[in-house]
Length: 202
Ligand code: GAR
Image 1 (tube, rainbow, N blue to C red):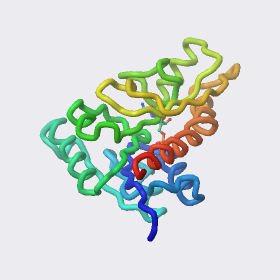
Image 2: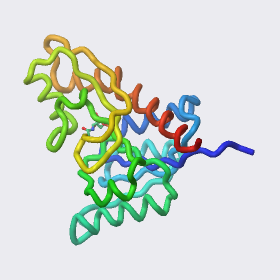
Image 3: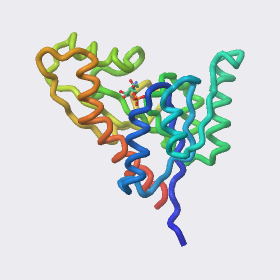
């Protein structure tokens, strides 16, 4: 009998390079305890959706403007995730802050990748390029990425994996972002997904 794999829903808003790293790791066998069964986006034009389709993975788009308020929008996301019989939710560049109701509903089953060494440059307002702008403004010489469980505090849940990356003289936010993705995020996110999935299916 084939071994059970954890069912993963990946939540995205943008380019989806972290989603791609997960899909590639699945293909190469680095992720063997889970499989991405749904990619859900809050942006209709997210390139991440193309990446999902190219890999033959189902997609869903849920737009905030289609709902009367944040609560109803989130409820639609929860229902879609539940209907997919999701074991693990991966936030991969998902630019929506989730309520306590959401994080409670999926307690211990949501992980996020953040482009800094938490607790530096994290929490509300720190996302995407802004994180790297803040790191450069502070003049840190080392930054990196963190994968952590998600709870009701933005970027506040238990840390699963971290990897440090050097900041070099003359870095722009874009150059630093690319280095952090290549050297840290795309490495530790798939590794953390495999680790958590292997614990889920035990
Ligand atoms: C990544 O750098 C991710 O760490 C960051 O957004 C980018 C998404 O890129 N997430 C956050 O800042 C969350 N606070 P991607 O769509 O190419 O994976």
